[in-house]
Image 1: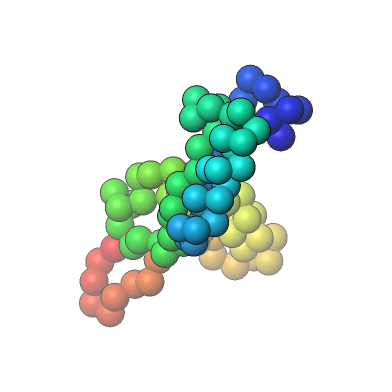
Image 2: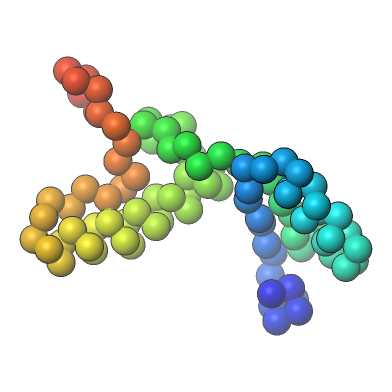
Length: 94
């Protein structure tokens, strides 16, 4: 992708630190700078509070949730939850 889109910036995420380190090494071997590409360790656990999701992974989850979950539930005439709805605690107002 860096060759096809040389003016773009890329961020890669994985929950496996050794894989992230290897990706960093490969990018360095290819002469790619931290300005163009970087790799971060990140876990796919979704938080229940919006303010805990205001990060790069959270943004991706909210976008995917809106595009996939809302449109899918609307198509089947079901409630349109989407928006990265997490578990609800009994008796807790979310």
